[in-house]
Length: 226
Length: 226
DNA sequence: ATATTAATTGGACATGTGTCCGCTTATTGT
DNA sequence: ACAATAAGCGGACACATGTCCAATTAATAT
Image 1 (cartoon, rainbow over the protein chains, first blue to last red):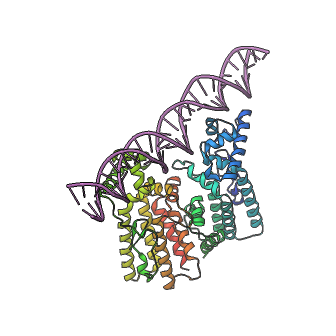
Image 2: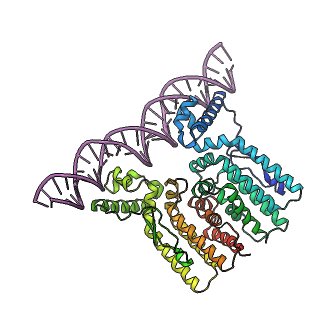
């Protein structure tokens, strides 16, 4: 378990014996006491946003609407969530944690069953595709509006990348794939079609089904093992 | 040669004997007479924008600045270019046409020299990466602000996709790769890391060099041929 | 309890995007 | 040359995002 920018992440690295890696990324002073009115406001904001998003769609709702519905000033809203994207990420926080827990559990199970690492990777990608499918609007909003300084990456993406990297390294260790490859870059390449905006383009622009996307990606991964 | 939304594209399909395909996509009434004052304004807008972008960077310039520099009203500016993205695409129009011509010529040469289709594809991807590298700011702005209705895709992307598809089908015809694959989806997957926003993430977020991106992508393509 | 302090609040404000519409001007037909 | 007319023009306006800061209020120390 580690934290990036205030969000919790399960570490899949435990599975790969890399637990020693220092993962102290940002935000060392997280649990600084939050004033209770502030906390109440945060919760009102989140539930108001969830409500509005559900009834009118993410893109049709603006920050002013949310602040009005939550009965706080705009300044208060922006103090908590620098933009709509951060708000969306916060709304998904719980579901992301759940998803990560499930992934961790399933990969653990597969490892105990001696399932090949590449197969685990294929399963992970499929799971990720379905997660994307469910949360496309929120994910797109988040990836659009959050600014990333050079050298920085979106918090959820770091976890995905680490997981893919871990599975690839596991595959090397199990002699499933050749070791002389650029694994960080390879992981990013594999994940590229699952970037929210690209995924939406594939789905809505091209009309591909999640199954079709999954099949092609799994085919590519399968080819990694000669 | 065909046109999408007013921009010209060289057809690489000629190389693959698919010239019969009907490519009448949109805009049948393109060369509708443009009033000469309108044309003069369009040119002033484009050169003013190019000037401002060059000196201050794409993201630092806004539409009001451009309209002021071009000495036209904002209404006029928006009449020609619905948003900054379209303006950026228009600015790249010439260079894209040049790039496409070069690609077409080189692929033709390689085909005459009996270069393997997969090698041609690798060359194409490398060329595309360098084109992206050169035009990242304009491409990102364009891909961000242009709205795409479901079933629609960005104009430059269609050409890229067609080219990759053509080369893949060529590779099938030459027995370089297996025929039982989902080629449209595969082409999109290969191109995913080159989507402007993803490419920028790879470059700036992760610090990968264009060469590194190219190498990994070429490695993947190489694996397509067993 | 009360004073002190520091976080929090909320609306006014600054900026950017994109639309609207009355006025102007180039083009076309006579 | 001269209407007639359709296209083009441009600034005011509507709306969204995000910032700022004076006033308020919760937490802490006395």
